[in-house]
Length: 195
Ligand code: HEM
Image 1 (tube, rainbow, N blue to C red):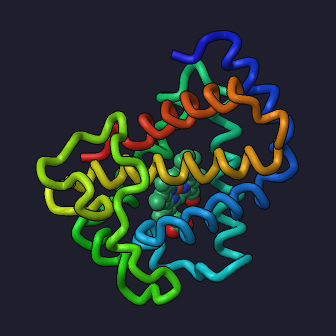
Image 2: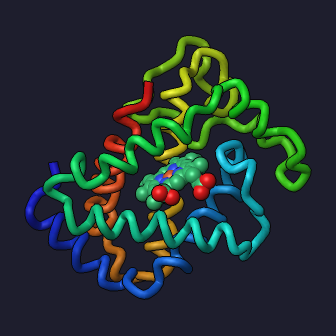
């Protein structure tokens, strides 16, 4: 699915990430928690304050894993197999909780529950009758697997924003396309063992 040129673009851009795994990862996670607070549901055991050690530590792990994926782009399933097992277990969150968490105890994000989904039509996320525009994912009719796929898209999106901020002009539309496809492929592997 990734062509030769796209793989080259990904590898080349990744050189700019090296040495910044912790910063970029923490920034992506912080963006995810701020913009999509329902994702905090997965991290009830973390200190989610700005610059928390846990966020920095976890961010480094996530971006380091992405770096492994960059080195094994032709064999993502095998390279990410263990991580896929781990996420199939970790991300076992009831979509009802996912929804409920969006509006509760998050006074700094008022009304988030009433906002329409950030991405109305998502490839790979099946349409739910009656759910369109009715709220965040986790609306009735979403399976737990749907919410996981959605969470993976949210983190992928936040990581792309981080890349865009730091790579600036080098994050061309072509690099953007390549990373979009790459992160979708990584996400597909991380969600594939989820039942
Ligand atoms: C753990 C990578 C997406 C939730 C981890 C770990 C890595 C990782 C490397 C640590 C594994 C270990 O300790 O052995 C990734 C990558 C992702 C991704 C590369 C996608 C690009 C997500 C998403 C969520 C999530 C979208 C939920 C919003 C978790 C949780 C843990 C975890 C809850 C366990 C954290 C802990 O208790 O230490 N992930 N992850 N991950 N991930 Fe992900």
